[in-house]
Length: 228
Image (cartoon, rainbow, N blue to C red; front, side, top):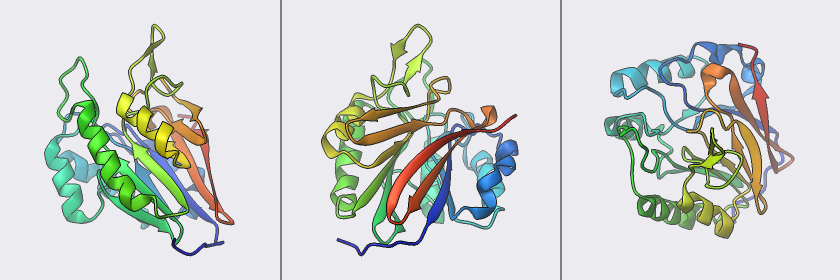
């Protein structure tokens, strides 16, 4: 197992940016952050050009940025993020010597036919593959654009749960420390599945973000809201 690290770290997680990163600079903790995590949906059915505009805005703060596609981003964005070395989708990224995050972007099928939708079986395969590497670390963070099913983080009007069963089943079995998710804008919330803290900040344009911290080697996540 990688060695423990007692230095304090702070990362800012956002999602569902949809071509509009303008309010990101208002986040008061930005000056102290060690990195930025994007859970998905950089664009609105956009390709590399639109994704590059968003990433340029985030990377202007001169700290590492890791991102992945959501269902609204075209598949070419996934390849572009990989080429740049910024991709989270199906990647395992070390945050500290004893903490990793691993990502699964895109979404399960929606009624809207968005650009990056896949069956539950694909998510189960991606999660299993990444977990084989991530599980060696003391602390783990799953970054999933899809929220897990049947939580406060996947509810749409009518009290209908539309999250991923594959993500839910994975969390129940693997129990990473934290799951950062998105996709369902109106389900800004914190919930738990066993020991896993599940956090959906909602859309960035509505001011939602997460402070992910490692203090004395212990992980925590806090939901925050900008006055926009």
